[in-house]
Image (tube, rainbow, N blue to C red; front, side, top):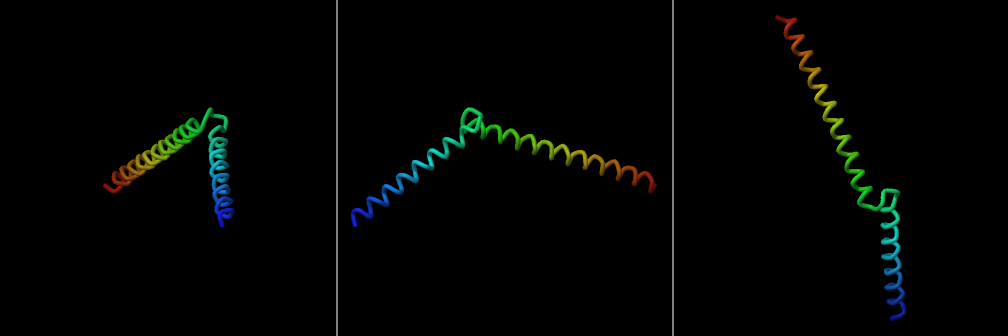
Length: 75
């Protein structure tokens, strides 16, 4: 019974160590650490959001221009 518990504990410990190793490896993906990669991703997401917002504004402006033209034509 004690052997079985010890084996389970050893297995859990090995899994924890391998998780930590994987995290370290992922974090070093050429950017000097995990934090750098995370910041890069956040910057990319901000840029994409800004592009979407600009696209929305352009569509709204075009819609307003069309509405003005149609409104003038109806008068």
